Image (cartoon, rainbow, N blue to C red; front, side, top):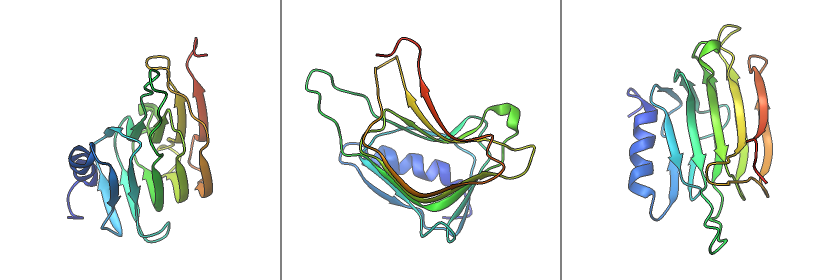
Length: 168
């Protein structure tokens, strides 16, 4: 249903798919996101119909979509990374809110392609893409692939790589 909050719908699908993973296909050409989606596991991909065909406008004051890959250091097993592709996301929260469009916490083997990220205007300038290595559970990012990812002029920061203090 493209007339309601796509964030709430994605969160519902993430809950249903968490154990087995899967692909979430955004069924809209235009969607609005007002609900943050966090804790998306690395075995869940989100795909639209194309960078110019699917547009999501996110008004979340915080992070719109967050993938999180906790590491099982006992087995050192890593899940297969997600694919994030085929959409444009426009940040529409005030710059002062610290909006982040997509955050990847401990992304290993992720592929991000055919994605456009931007803010809606000069008073809505998000961080567009964040790779974050966290101290909390010692996540790290490596072996990720990006291609055909564009950052508009209203991104306060296009791509940001953040390493928590104290991480190895």
